[in-house]
Image (cartoon, rainbow, N blue to C red; front, side, top):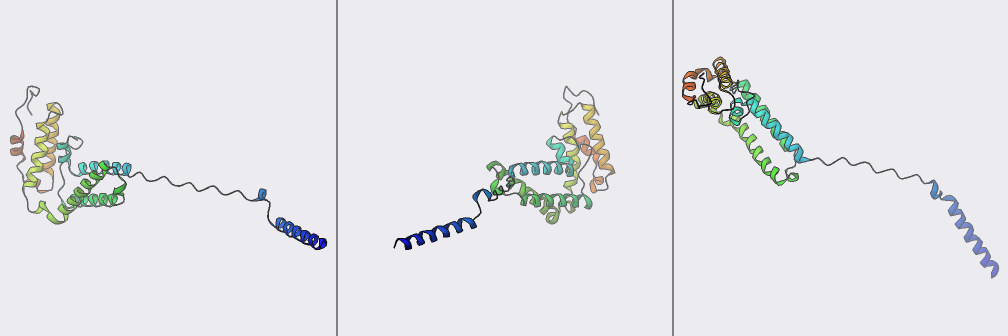
Length: 208
């Protein structure tokens, strides 16, 4: 009985020793590869802020009269281009902005930017609809008088610069309109200018 127990004990020891010899030492196990760095989550608020800035700047370039009315005087000597080429540039710009808006997850924006997102999206869609469907330039003659009048009146009605500078910009806008190939050439710019020139304030002693 004691022999049998010894044999059984030896057999068990040998079996365990064999198992241990087949298993690689723990010290020889390769180190686990470090976890791959996760890319930073996109900041949709920053993306929307950048897109909004680019939309505003592009809109002012396409509509210089609107830029002047908003207080941006970089394009005072220019007028809105209502030619087929000008309308196509505006349409391409609006469609591009709408496509970029679609890449921004609105639900990830701050509450304030969610509201601005809806406003901007509706504005861009409205601009596209105006060019493709309403086409006011083809049947509404007041559009041209509004552009000419706005280009001149806004420069004279606000004291954003000394009068000689304002006068010079007004005359450049006038020449631009007269030399334009659009229907703006059919408007009496001199009449618009006379009607839009306000009474000079004490700080404006020189006349154009």
